[in-house]
Image 1 (tube, rainbow, N blue to C red):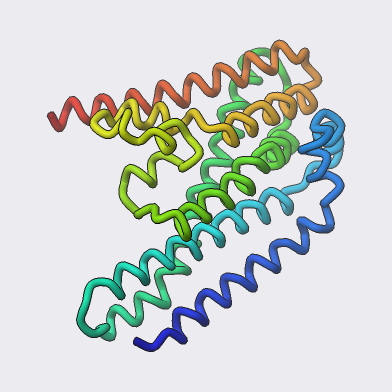
Image 2 (cartoon, rainbow, N blue to C red; image 1 turned 90 degrees about the vertical axis):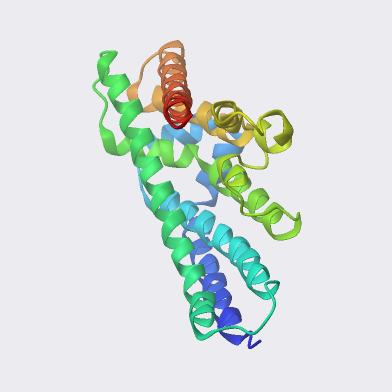
Length: 250
């Protein structure tokens, strides 16, 4: 089996990942502050918002995920036995880029929707919040989820023997559902609920609460309430939709 098309595709993805690190390196003080002094860093983000670093984080997340999942895809094709057809050769080259587009689109959409929900809750609570600074703050707050969570997920997929089953795609490996898959194997609503209980996601949520407080200038208690309501709405909507779907199918 000729490996050079797949190797070339991975090489392009690797170069893309390195290119994304350049704008992140230029903002290393702000990104480091998100981990060591988030209040100060998010005050700076609120005063001088930008979208480049969050977008670069999303791209790194998408590229790492694509490279890891593409390796599994190649392994599945190679383990099927027999020769490789022309269509499979084309897929070997195209699939990594399709995965990048899919992961990127999903996470960009999630970033905008998350910001929109928090912005709407802040407006309902009486805060006159501008959308763009909040978008930037929420993007920077997603650093643990996109970077650390993405690296761990990619490593688990590539080296941990994880398959690309629906269960794995629903539950990140660091979530309760990922750590204890047997607890939720037969219960999809519970699987989605436990899949949301994940340390890097919760860390990002806490940073987003601080970002809301810095952007809105409101009390931390109010910002925490906005963040809690947002999280409960996400959990309720996700679990509720899955429960209704299962009830309709059953």
